[in-house]
Structures are given as C-alpha cells and as structure tokens.
Picture 1 (cartoon, helix red, strand yellow):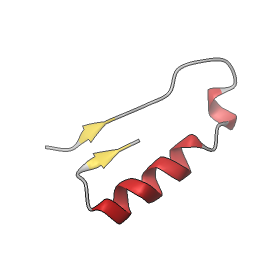
Picture 2 (tube, one colour):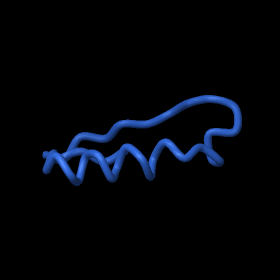
Picture 3 (cartoon, one colour):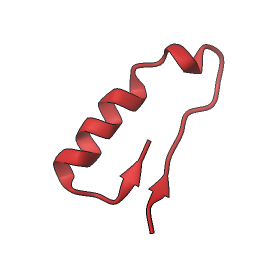
Picture 4 (cartoon, helix red, strand yellow):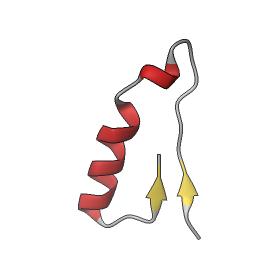
Length: 34
C-alpha cells in the first residue's frame, strides 16, 4: 500500500520539496508519494 507524505504551511504550493522528494523516493525504489 502506497504511503503519502506532505508539507503543510504558508506558500506550500510553491515549494520545490515535492519534486525533490519524489525524485529521491523513486531513486530509492520506495512505495511512497510526496
């Protein structure tokens, strides 16, 4: 079952965090989505 991670806060929609984390998650072969 895929687990989901996220970010909460002001201007979260402009964060580069999802792209960076999803790239790392994919490289590690984990069943997660940021």
